[in-house]
Image (cartoon, rainbow, N blue to C red):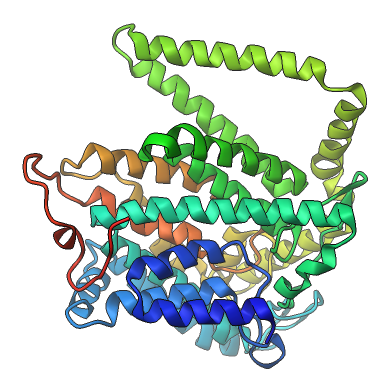
Length: 474
């Protein structure tokens, strides 16, 4: 057991008895350490830190007296999160039944293989992957329940920011160590064993991976954190809103570029389009010219002028290097061995879906390079139908009136969800949508179903917390 693993185990053990926000903060910090396995990979496979933290948070939320009834109410009411429960039950059925039903019928790329095709059949991934997906789904239940508390939402926003700061620190530490020849100092954070394809250098530039398994994984989590900073900024107050969140967003955007991940670049483009669309929509919705509208217009004009001035000051050699990086990552990507191999994974997944007549091969049976293809190939038409209904229901505007604070948070989460989803569509190798995206679903559900509160009475901290959950004030 190395030093980082020991430290994190001690923190997790402490969080079991500590107030719930301890494991909440630890969960968002854990998303930075994607290549750290808390258990020996040679014995039980890779067990990421985030998986353990999520499991502890699920246990702390629903295992206590009085809260299991709340879980049952959420999980088995189709008007609430019953669709997710049906999806989870069907997922378990597919993982056990379909690899046996179609055993030996054709070849595909197994999830736990070394990048070579083999006959379809039951593997250990049909056990581990359903567990990972179930934990991600469990995050939706947790945040749908706890997110109805204003105090929990305050801790949630702070935890998101802390996680983004830790992620940013890991990226710049990796960047500095790689250029000083001390990158081996981070080896203790890379004890997980993954099938990594990405090259370490692109266009002469060393790729930043932080403490993630590869540059594409680091780029994905960085863009997701950046999206949260951009679209949740208005939910913060004071110094955090004016200085800390914008500075963090700028640092994350730079790291997304330094990762030279094609997925990250696409995510940045989607993020920029969403920001522009949101700005245009806000201007069009303003009924009369006022100071706020003028401020926004001047901000855009000023930002554009500064951007043009900045571009003219960039040395020609640096401009040529940026062009070379973009050309290598986006336009020459299809000629790389990484792209060719990943494309073959996805094509095999599509073939598996059709060869089972749309039934699927079971969760954990196939490796792809596209999350949507893996999900469809694993769970077939029925899984897509259930998950699609759940997403539609979550994003559907709520019937009742909700707080302005909750409405703003929901809008930000829905927008921040999109760049991460797009990147997943380009690089996801498993059917697991991920802890981060499922947390977003849970919080969106919570804040869009929290009734508007009366203003005069300011309830005590305890009354702002779901029954049985212990939180302390910030």
